[in-house]
Image (cartoon, rainbow, N blue to C red; front, side):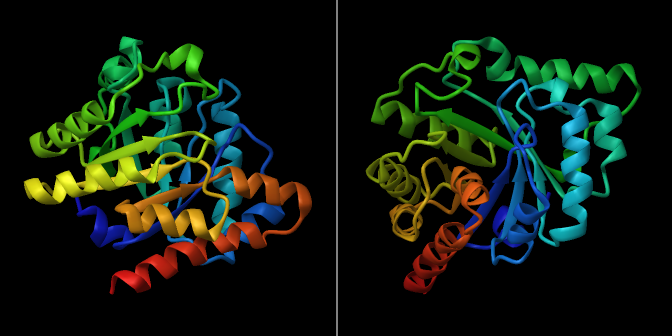
Length: 260
């Protein structure tokens, strides 16, 4: 597996497409015409179906010539036959677990179930294109909370889970998931400083409430290696003005230039 920064860069702007939502051709064109670094396909709702995923992957191929990452939240979103059918339409796979979930399925059970689906078919999941991700759900009121049932973590627990996961090699990256809510940059800074002090490699990704260039800049300068932008994209789709989405990319670029 190629190192994350070799594939995506040092300061990364991810655009997230939710297959469960309406994704117009204009929205896909806006992403394709932007300077975003890569696109993540992910949605936590039960409205994400294989049919909708197939549709958005196929239409994205026409407009978006960026690296594409598939980040399914549960096995039904990525059955083996569909994963193989769409193998030419995505580049990378995020294998996700939620360490602070009270639901054992999200802590690793879904991954086991999914692996068994492949085993029964005599096939192997796309591990050669996959990164292991620990998603820490830090917005306890997010959309899928009734299913994920996240447990509140203290700052010390976030640091401990992050460092232990990266140091052990169990995870390639830690994903701070605030899901629509703008989170705490000081927490990101604390984890980044602890990571550097311990000499631990690994990637920190932040997602949630990035809807201005200032917020994107703040999270990258706080220590995140990447930010994920999604909700602002769908707000722009409603108005027809994609400038706020483009501004978030500018915020990452400004932070990247400052770090040089």
